[in-house]
Length: 279
Image 1: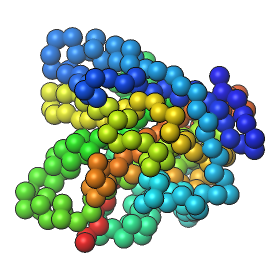
Image 2 (image 1 turned 90 degrees about the horizontal axis):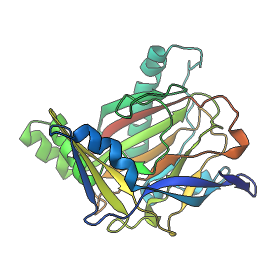
Image 3 (image 1 turned 30 degrees about the vertical axis):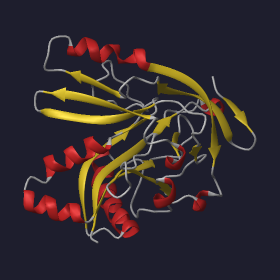
Image 4 (image 1 turned 135 degrees about the horizontal axis):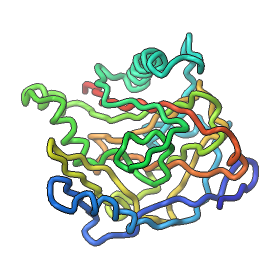
């Protein structure tokens, strides 16, 4: 159970992975026992109590390039919570792509995925889970991001030209109403050791593979969030940066804020894209 400290800082339990020799786990669904091995991944879970700092009124001190994330002010004309999910997506996806292009100076963006998270939960972990994700993770490792890029840009000449520039994967997380219950926390990327703290979590499917990142706990990790985040305050964060050595990817996780456990389930949209900046 979490507890509040000070103004809106929160002490909360975060689910990490324990440190694993080789820092890599592969689940192959194309071989017998794949589903069972997937179900057993929970054995790597480790819960650690962490102080999550509220950066409300100090959010301008954190930037995409310095910390791996940035809160911005972005009012989308015409947005209304009463809209259908399809209407929300049709409005917010292009508006968010334009926002990211303006913020990064991108010449081009390619949408990877978008998902509305809400009160729905799923019986099976591999389902299209729309509930908050209570685990410390990133959506891609460096290897996983580069592989995904190659599945999207199949022309080797075009791919080589793109790689000459700056390639990001950017995730934009926006609440659809004020975010109180189960807010999203981010870990300042500069506080994470890229060699020691990351664990590659690869999944092999019949049509290919993907690799996301899990994180081993360190007392050096600095966790932050914005209390009562508004729909006009989207969080923009990196999930890959081709020019950052190990390919910065930001760890993040939902967490339980005890003051709001009885609030209505949160509603949010996340929009993920490749971002290409010419150099």
